Amino acid sequence: MTQTRPAPDTLRRSDFPAGFTFGIATSAYQIEGATSEDGRGPSIWDTFCREPGRIRDGSSGDVACDHYHRWEADLDLIAALGVNAYRFSVAWPRVQPDGRGPVNAAGLDFYERLTDGLLARGIEPHVTLYHWDLPQPLQDTGGWPNRDTAERFAEYAAAVAGRLGDRVRSYATLNEPWCSSILSYEIGEHAPGLRDRRLALAAAHGLLLGHGLALPELRRQAPRAAAGIVLNLGPQMPASDRPEDVAAARLADGRFNRWFLEPLLRGEYPRDVWEACRADVPEVREGDLALIAAPLDFLGVNYYSRGVLSASGGGVPAGAPVTAMGWEIYPQGLTDLLLRLQADYPGLPPILITENGAAFTDRLEEGQVHDPERVRYLQTHLAALRRALDAGVDVRGYFAWSLMDNFEWAYGYEKRFGLVYVDYPTQTRVLKDSGHWYRQFLR
Image (tube, rainbow, N blue to C red):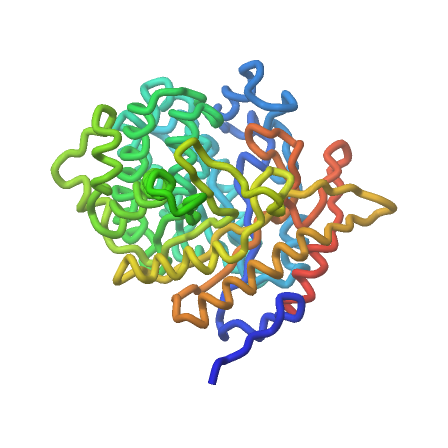
């Protein structure tokens, strides 16, 4: 007899396993502000934002959501949502202004206050160590393509875990290394804004090596905390069954998904992508892949959309619904992705959906923000997740992106992903209808 599941609009927390984690997520540079306070050094994003034409609205994260000063009220806001977990990132330049050498005590003090404040409210802290804000002095010596950066990252990871320890439920080494390598060093859309495929692939290897070097440090300093990594993943589908479109989708899948999955889960780079990029592939030294492929306690998956590829490029299918980012709304892609991970990678570690959300054009009207599209997005993606659970995929948690509107990288403040609306001139926070829905769902 086939088991039936509730429709997306009637889904409840009780339709998920007992002990399933429901959370909300942010990142440091997007919300903290206070970029020159209490000993914080400059990051590549501080530099990038000051280069003309890099950020669509000419803004920066200098103030952002002023979370550095408003963290206590923001934690109360998280608690009021009814989530049992909060995923946040630590700003490397706040902890180690030069990316090496002495630790800035005031920086670690802030994250300790944040961690203890969450625990006092009954909320699990989930820490991401690197969400793209590399200390500028490390970029000045080559950034992630320089192997020394991986060594410095392991030292930084040890410092953070040494202070926060097992009070943290999980540590993710990296967030979306595709973004901090390919998008940043080849496509040029993110800091440091370069356009060099050779450097991009070297950066990707450097990031994965940094992850591999950091894992044993995390396990030494916080043995009871889970240690893993977060990847942005999505199905890459051919626009037709023509061989050339199928080949384009296969290569896109290799560059977007498998270039990171296979070193981590199989200890090797995908052969087809290696051959396609042969002139630009990174130096891989003996022992590198064994470090990178060390067992994970969890794999974080950030899912937003899929890719649809043809021999002439990619695009959104005609008539498909899209978010304000122009990304196709395709909940089935989450189910497909999770089933594919389960099928392709025997021994796959437990999965956390570490980001899932959407930007829409939100307006504050008479003290309220009505965002029915985001409510529907959350409902349909949670239903897609439920289908994957029914098929036996070991998913342990879901974190909605994002707690509040924030600095959306190269888009500045033009795009709003939050369940909480931020009126930037006043820093007033207003719970959107989607936030009210999430709170009701969690009850």
